[in-house]
Image (tube, helix red, strand yellow):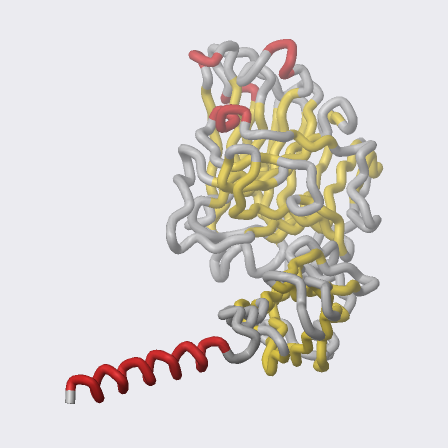
Length: 398
C-alpha cells in the first residue's frame, strides 16, 4: 500500500509540472489594462462663444486601440441655451495616452452666477475607467452686461439759473479715466477697519447698459477675503458750489457699506479731517431702508467733529428702486436732499472752534466697503456679490 501511495504522489507532481509549463513556460500574466480619467474644465464665458476641451488620459500607453463612449449631461448649465449637447466615442490609438472631447459653449455677456455641466464616460474598450465625470464650469460672474430695472425717482437734466458743469451718464462701454481714478488695496482698513481689497478690475467696477456697476465680492485677493471698488475724481473733476444729483440703486446685506461722498481736494496738504468730508449718502446693509448724511471737519484729528442726519424711507428699501441723492452747495451753506426732500442743512455757524472747510474744492468718491467699525463684519447670512448701480452724476453751477 505504501509503494502505491508513493507512486501516486510522483504521478500527481509530474502532472502539475506539465500543466504549469504549458503556454510557453514563461509563467507571466497578461498585462493589466490602462485606466482612463477625464479632466474638468472652467473658463470665462464670452459673447462670441468658446470651446471647452476635456482631456481623456490613460495611466499608460494603450497596447490596443481604446474607445470610450461619452455624453454631456446638463446641470445648472442647460443644453442648447448654455452649451451644445454632445455625444459619441472618443478613441485613443495604440501607443498613445490621451485624446480630447470638445464641447461648444454658447456666447453670452450677462453677469450672473456661474453654471456647470459634465461629460460622462462609459462603455470603455481596452481600458478601465478611473474618473468617469469631467465637470465644465462656465464662468459668468465676469460678464460685462448687467441690466438694472430703471424704476425709481429721477431728477431733471436742467435747472433754471444753472449750467451743467459736468456729468457722467455712464453710457459708454468703459469707465472714463479722464474723470475717474481707481484706488487700490486695503490701506490698513482705510481708517475704518474695512475688510475689502479695492481693485480697478472689471470684476469690481464696470459700465453696463447706461449704469456704473460697483460690485463687492467674497473672494481671496491680495490678502483679503473680499474685493470691491473705490473710484475718485481727485485732481480730475473737482468742484466748489453748485447743485449735485447722483441717481443710484443701493446694495443691502449685513456688513455692506456703500457711500457716495466727497473730500477736500487739498487732503494731501492738510490731511483729514481738516480737508473736510461731505457724505451725501451712506447706508449700512443691515438697515436697507435708512441712509445717513454727515459732514466732517476739524483742524486736527483730535479736534474732529461732525454733524448730520438720517432718513428712513416710508416704505420699501433703497435696494428696490433708484433714488436721487442731491446737494445744494453755496458759500457757507450745504443742504442735502433725498428725492428732493431736504434732509439736512449745515452752515458755517454750525462749525465752531475749527476752520470751516466747505468753501474749498472737493472731489467725489463712490465705493462699497465691506465690514468696518460702523457696519460690522459680514456674517453667515451675508449674501455676495453685492452691487451699487449709479445711473448718473450731474453737477450744475451758476
